[in-house]
Image 1: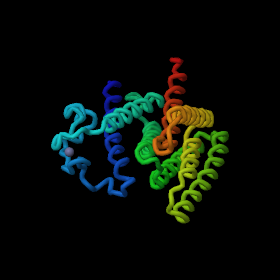
Image 2 (image 1 turned 180 degrees about the vertical axis):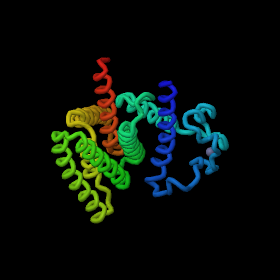
Image 3 (image 1 turned 135 degrees about the vertical axis):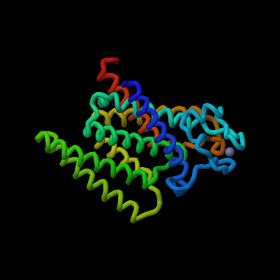
Image 4 (image 1 turned 90 degrees about the vertical axis):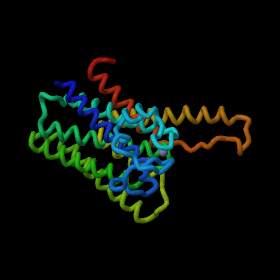
Length: 273
Ligand SMILES: [Zn+2]
């Protein structure tokens, strides 16, 4: 029975993954993400219901558009698979299964699942466009507020004062975060990657434990370091025109590192490492 439950969670995840690929494509173009029908970006043909089944439609169509036969980026397939697997991992780590479906578990699962969707959205857009969309950060901050409210309510119910102090501190952080967020939108339309990375880091740190954040940042710095070294070696003896573009998708690196840390700490908690 539990396998069916996890399969169901996996399918929900792939549906979110499918929505994510669409959102990472449309949000930077400021296109509607909910009402407009899905279409092939190469031939503009509207996609039928069967073309939209996550994972399977990609496999059945062998990675090609049904109408123009042009190659579909494997990004779609990987995104769907990754989101599906993430959802299953969240359910497993929260010990959410068929035998303990309680309101609390459902809320905890939903909040964390949406947090993962947020991270994948930011990472996807950053990888493709090397920028963070303000709207996605507002989305992330909103989930963060909901999470803090939930933590606050459950801490009050349990009477755990220890958590309460931490939550109040987080609340202050979040208010600062919101002010910075709104200010940066109001003052300048110019995108400010550094501030966006900072906001992303604060969201991550308030959502997970301090140690997870520190390790994620360390991992990200390591990736940046390695990438810089590779760039240096690659660019040696080349003139300015031949050098490859050094812009790095830092948010993508940070989120990738964060995912690795989250999965590692989960495996560690199971004594598998
Ligand atoms: Zn097509």
